[in-house]
View 1: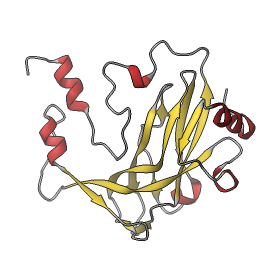
View 2: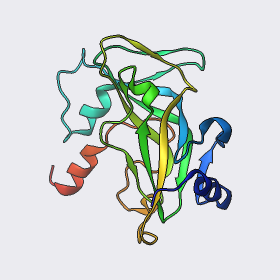
View 3: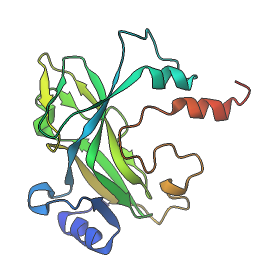
View 4: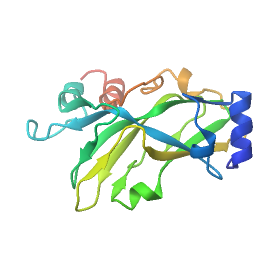
Length: 196
C-alpha cells in the first residue's frame, strides 16, 4: 500500500521514515511523495580517456569516473546525451517494513532530464543518500542547480518487516553512502568468481 501524505507525516513523526535535513513539508510534501533536492557532487565518465568499461575489473569502473563538486549557486550543465551520477541533498532511512521508490519529477522530465535509469527501489532498512542516474535525452543543454527539487520519493508498506534489512545485508554495496557511488558490479563478479 502506498502511503498518503498524512501517512508519510505520521511515519516521519514516528521515525519510521527519517529524512535529514528535515524537509520543508509545505514545499516538499506531495499527495503521495516527498521531493528530494539535488546535492553538490556529481560523477561523470571520462569517455575521452577510456574506450570501454569492464565490469569484471573494479579499476575499470573507478578509473573511468571523475568526481565534480559544484558550489550551491553553480550550475551543473548536462549536455545532450550526457550521463552523470548525482546524489540527493537529503539522506533517507527506512524502517524494516517500508520501501521507497524514487521517481523523476515531471517538471524536470519535460526538460529532457531523466533522474534514474532502473534503480528506483530502495529496500526496507535503506540508509544513506540516493544516487541518481541522470541523463539528458533532449537536444539542448540543461543547467541543474544544487538545492533544486530533482526527484520524489513515495513509500510503500511491505506485508511484514523483512528478515534482512538492507543496511544489515552482508553484501550490501551502497548502504550509508553520502555522495554518489560508482557501480560496485565488480564486487559481485569477484564474489561469484573468486578465482579471478
